[in-house]
Image (tube, rainbow, N blue to C red; front, side):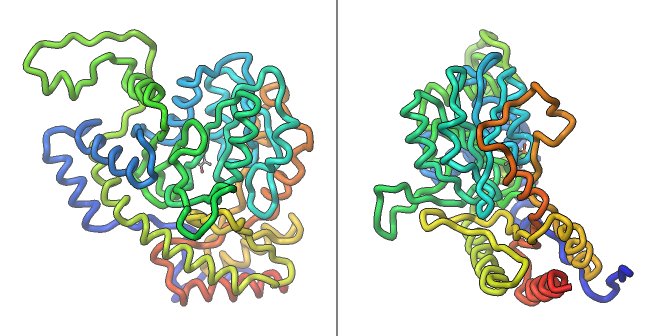
Length: 396
Ligand SMILES: *Cc1c(COP(=O)(O)O)cnc(C)c1O
């Protein structure tokens, strides 16, 4: 029988960390007289670029539009194939479909939920144009190996870094303790970030595209604002009348200045958010490693994840629901693992390609993973309740 927790506070699976600073920033933008893409957006772009070490950062309305712009700007369209994963939030594969290109789904590794780099070469065909890799749940994928492979085959690399603001990698060949590089430098051609509340840094909704290529950055800026040749901020500041042109069909993928002002405060908090999550994740790791029936996620030696989510795996699909319900009965919210696009009705036969190797591990990961509560304000005491409840539930 399920019990309704009365006195015990419910522990959510995630929670944004925002306060008076964000509220004051939104107020500042609202009272400034300029509320859509303007000076706050420009400032957030500069500050985010500096944080990840990218020469260019272009703010957009969310990560889905960021992925779409990245693919369009790289010239990907009908007849092209893009190598990616089914095992991701559906926006990853949807962005490929928007362009008319076909997603080619490669299987993942079970302990990181990331694309298996050993399977990528086998997925390349004469139609392949790009690899759209995901740093799933914040855990860096093997971007060094993927970029090497892509360069050898003349392919572009787009990083879906939706969850990975604050994550770091060490590319092989490097050595020493201080050569950690932020995700988003980027290591591929373009990296796309999300500022949705389920990620660390949030603006409500929002996104960012980083690149080292100035021409690509210019294309993002053109396309995010209707293909308008002269941004409204420039016309506003000009003492001469300027008539803008529309040389290409663009989109409205703008971030607002209200959101950007909030984002600037969130960016200041990001290092503390990552540090707190890494501490809590280490506690989960120590308490749950070796528990029969539970597999903990593995962080490769060359990766430092921001632990956007901490997902364990139970041993059989039949236990996933029971364990989640047992935790909910104790006031603890969890979520199933990452979904698989190819299992959804929006992905009928013919709309995607299965890469050699199949998608067995992607399906197993979806059916056995459980995302545990992890957020900045989670207390050690509440985390201990999660750990105790999980141990009890898997032993039952
Ligand atoms: C959240 C997420 C997205 C979508 O981000 P939005 O900002 O909500 O559009 C895309 N890919 C991955 C891997 C995500 O986790």
